[in-house]
Image (cartoon, rainbow, N blue to C red; front, side, top):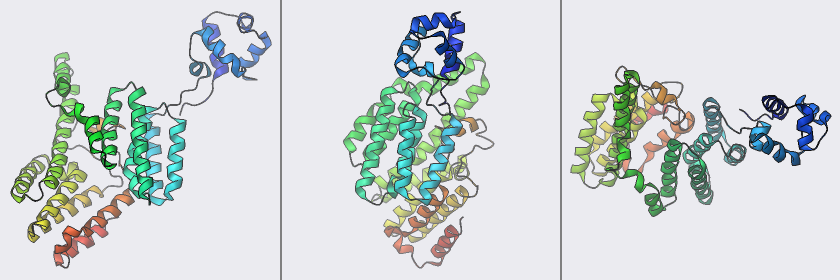
Length: 373
């Protein structure tokens, strides 16, 4: 991480670029030639009150003068994220939260990192024992995302922060604020929604078919799993209308089979199959509920089959690996493996699934899930 002060070397390079002598610089700043020499050789540093004068003389910022850039590389961001996620799994929670807050203060202008910290908080705030503390963490997410939106120049990170802020508002029970935050992003007739198509066509026109394929595949991959995620939500919304839910389940099953979704994105499919099982259990369709609970367990076994909870492409989606590996992509595990397994086992205790208790098939599914390591 680039947070080393290089003021002496910077002064030397800036002076040489301007073809100035040490004496000329010393005269302008009002110090001795010996002082400039000591700065450049690292024997001493300029008085803090001289920094604005030196920066103004060279027409740069003070940060540029001293060589301090509080930024992290993509690899460093993900390394810190994964370490913190692992610490949340081991606790104590309050100490890990304090550590993340220190990181925020240290890298308050490293917006990709701040976004990842917001994601980290959103994925772990529920571990706080007190409801009040959970609410405080969600409020901190809202505040941090607002800071990113106000100051970051990367449109992609800003848009992701808007979505994350909306999710935080929703979890705070502030539905209207969530709507106000997100409504402009989901107006489907706006031209912004066609940006991906234009980029694909532009790359084709330029003859860069590799990029065109990559953007096409990424767009399709995202659309498929956005559809599945929305379908899972639609089932919860229409759970009392079995006919609508069954149509939704039937259509998504066809999509899943066509795109081999369980292998490509087991997490999204697990959520969908779980909601389908809850729907059938609610309507006392025991056999159908068991069928989807088995699919749910299959998805989780696939999810935990590797050492890391990472997504991947396949023979069809063979141009998306770089996108998945990017910090803002979805390849990185959002939570610690141990916590996800614990939550998965706990999900079998949902009250709606009580009608399955005691059934031999259901007990076998429990044992299979508990065997996952």
